[in-house]
Length: 162
Image 1: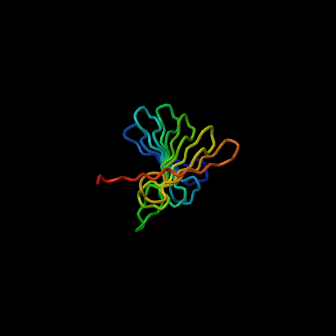
Image 2 (image 1 turned 90 degrees about the vertical axis):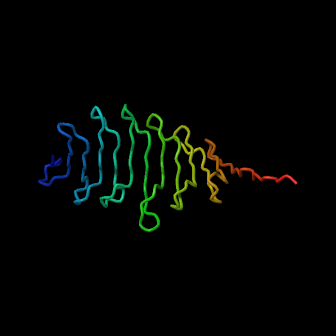
Image 3 (image 1 turned 135 degrees about the horizontal axis):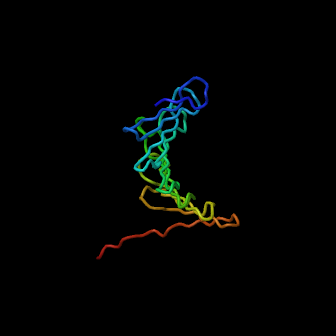
């Protein structure tokens, strides 16, 4: 089904059906001829996820996931990576619709190298993997009063028996 949501004579909303059931809706919100919002529906006509084109170029580069009650649970964002391949750049996790943590691949090499923790709607900590070891090598902890503490995880060394 095609729909002109604002009555300007141009279709901007496109619904895809499986029989009488809507499975996907695509929307061109800024009416530039490129889809910038995709809504995906599951059993019971529940919204499962929403894809967005943050760059308004018709490429779905952010996906929001919802639980059965409609609360946001996760957001995945992709970016342009090596060889023009899209890579997962950031994942945000939500509890009851509130951001609680995030993971990021800052150098787009396919491995998470930054972790953020949130408490009471504020950034509480950020950890970095500066040596590409797959674990944090430096952590910043933010207090509610705005002060910051830097933590360096201890270096683990393995001793070989002599």
